[in-house]
Length: 292
Length: 205
Image (cartoon, rainbow over all chains, first blue to last red; front, top):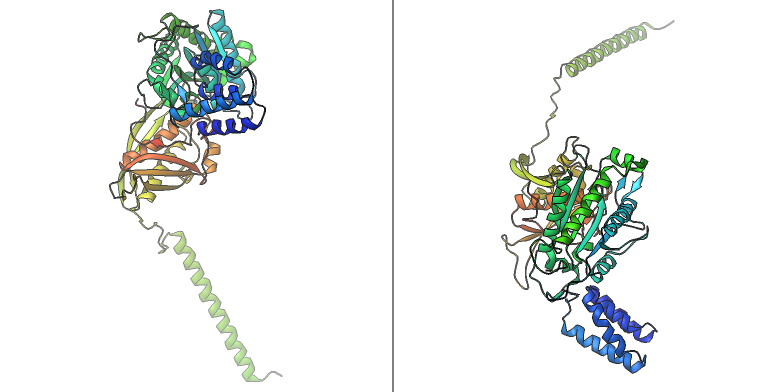
């Protein structure tokens, strides 16, 4: 369990020169940027760098973690938090040795990375801040992806996948939200099921994406799936599987990408996220940055 | 000069050999004719090992990301674990056909075993009506040949869970193994480390 792993790391850091402050922040605040704001207070308190200070912090941290129980890992945001910048997290799935599906001569990890770069350009051109979880072909752990998303305090988290559509149907986009059961918003939620507090918001985001894609004439299917990366995300999160046909990928690779299916999907998704921002990151009417 | 009795004996033996050869040739010819007429009395029909019963298969459809029920009549064994394996084998046989709505190679041999484990809490003893955890042991060949993709893998997992629950309502949870070992994902996407609820997860058309 993630909690246990972090505690062990901290015990080891007592003997090493690793700054325990960083580890504490990583553990307690790994789930949300709310903690990032608080970390400044702790940083000021430990500037002396003495052993006593380290020990005090470690003791404080241990007591804090015992207080918050063994299963409490991710902190949900307070509903009254002020609205911040509208941020979209783009998570290009796979990486490293994990190639994902094959799309002709291309692997899914390369396809999603290229699509992520394209999406980032489109969104930034529309004034939307973008955080990406992967900028190269290197592998990124599912927990690390969720950490990046949770620290970004994002209004929308998009997990990008791709696979060839079966030959009988045309190109399509498959939208998935987490299969975790929805739970009431809680101050602390377990890391592996952090998304359960955001299911309603994720459903609304999927609805907004579905509407934009359908409006663009793209076939869309909706479903729920078990994906560790989005299950740990504390933000409205949707996994998008772009499913082109074989000849479409070949055309895009040959330079027809500007008018191809992929570009059409990217434009529709960008339009949906602009709409999502205009609606205050929601369609149900709550806080301004997509929070439940 | 050859004695007369030896000549007679030689002729008798020669005649006997010719007669025996003729009889054997005749029998061989008759056996060949009988084979050609299809009059072989050897049993060719496989013995019936289980009575045919109705089974509900929850068949995935990639076109609309749905799972639809299909009722078939199958010979189903009495043993619950063998029964579960037979039903799932038929489901994967459907996926292996050329006109499958959810094409996945492998077929029935992809299910190595199905184990049914009663779910009990604390010191509670298992009863025949206790909810059960089904552990589906897939072969590595099936996993290696499974198409990689979020939708394809999710539909395979959910259709297996829904089919088990449709035929054995006592099965409420499903876990997956590959060649007896736990595995992170089916083909890069669907999480195989978790326990899936068997009921209420199938997407509707």
